[in-house]
Image (cartoon, rainbow, N blue to C red; front, top):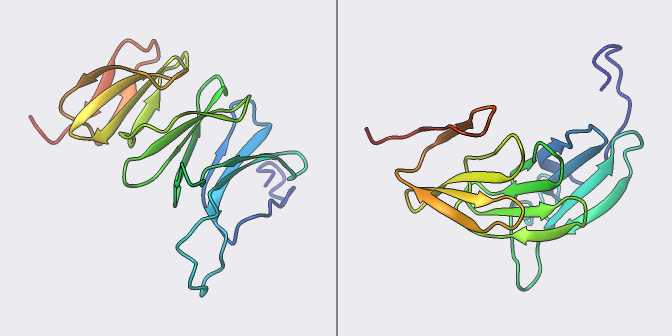
Length: 173
């Protein structure tokens, strides 16, 4: 939708029921994921394991990130976010599993557990995640390599604008 004119500009097709959408920081790409089966179909709880990257101006798919293979069975993804620099695409599930893709090469960077909530640092170099084994994890966004862990986990995260302070809402005092 064009919010100024309040008119629909492009229609994106591909899912019977999208479960997550994310714009790239430059606004040129829309990432989508969802269920491929319509309501009423017994296969409805399954998604097709594909993140679609679409051109915002035309609505056409420009790439597919395949998430379900015999080695990588992602299942139902319901969260998508681009890093602030647009080079990484984070995909996650409500159970805490997450997958980080290189949005430029369309290659999987990491499929490490420990994922939601999460936050990228403003410079896109660090990824802080929570939800795995009662820990906060700090990872290199470029590689997914774990840098350190903090406890206890948080069910809400925020990083300061300079990336130097991590705030976490925790259940423990």
